[in-house]
Image 1 (cartoon, rainbow, N blue to C red):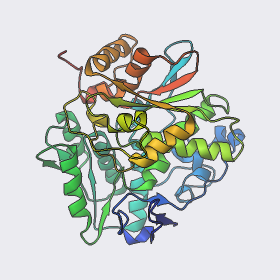
Image 2 (tube, one colour):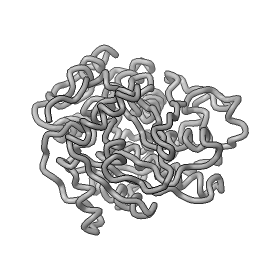
Image 3 (cartoon, helix red, strand yellow):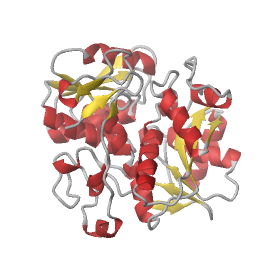
Image 4 (cartoon, rainbow, N blue to C red):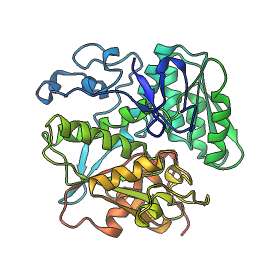
Length: 373
């Protein structure tokens, strides 16, 4: 295994240490890992999961050679592309085993934990990451606790428990649940499966872009429209684009178009103000609970990635999200409100004549139809 490395301080720690953050600045880790080139012409014969891109994955050697699945795989990945307009295509990541894109990162964390053999695994989540961690820990036979804000969707809490994990309901908002997890993460023998702090999660989410690249015949669209709360899908996309470009597998990099809920938009505010970091926002209710992150720990990295790509930030209101959810449902695609945010942004702000891929990240069955307005 390779080392964790702090992008701010340069501090390093072995992955085996179970250190969940930089001991100096308490910030999230990056991973000292160089991805190999993925041979597109050989992919057709490989397993139909994200492990088919094993050259690009830090735990790729855990699977069988030739892209075989790792021990905890549930066949995640390979979600379809469906046209929405002549230039905009949706990637149906709500068709994952636990019904959200978070499976991409969760399988990596569970596979890592399986190797490290901790006493127990913990996570914190507004719902989707927690359900994914719970499912893959169940697959791996790992003891798991998920700290969840008490206002999270009851269906997501039910799903966490159904997989055999313990949902620990925390009074307060999403940040309160994170603080509870941080306190527990310091205990001996605890592996903190943080989708925010642990970079293995980002190396899982980057397979979203590898799939788009493969399914579009070795190219990427002009723009990738991506949700930005903690930025795990966006930063994974940034990793993948950089790797594909470095290996000469794409000729140009797509713009990253980041989307936030208007009610909680610290990243969008910082971007448009020209700031390098985000000022924490006040917590506020929004239909897009999955991206309502007042103080994202990787804010600097997210802002840098969007700027480097030539992209931008858009915000969407609850009314726009509600309308987008209904519009998608009318097209046969029922997603949760957070999963409709990127399509809401495209409808509200447009993309000109650029081609784009929009992720539909979570199934509508997890939350139901948004009401009110």
